[in-house]
Image 1: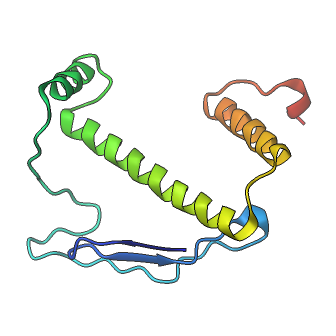
Image 2 (image 1 turned 90 degrees about the horizontal axis):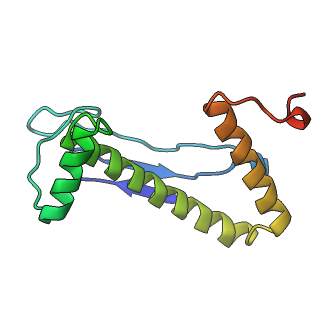
Length: 133
């Protein structure tokens, strides 16, 4: 798998993304981050202008007013970051399916159970008795 994210100012290339659960090692074989001429580095922000339909802007304002987001900028950042994560995960899944085939129903049931347990732990919920040991 190769992922390349690059506006010229912040070029990142990742080659080789493997799954530990399949007995392989996750490795990042190449990563470079460059400062752009304005002095921005990895982790800093950049101001941009975007155009949105009125209904989306109104929805974002309502999210901020309801305390669901600190700001419209923060909401947009969170939404874009989530979208990027989903796209990267979809690419990883496609690569795994190409190499190993699609997951069996049993494997998917295991994943569903593992995700339910991880969600319970993340939410501070007690584990079912059969999972507590």
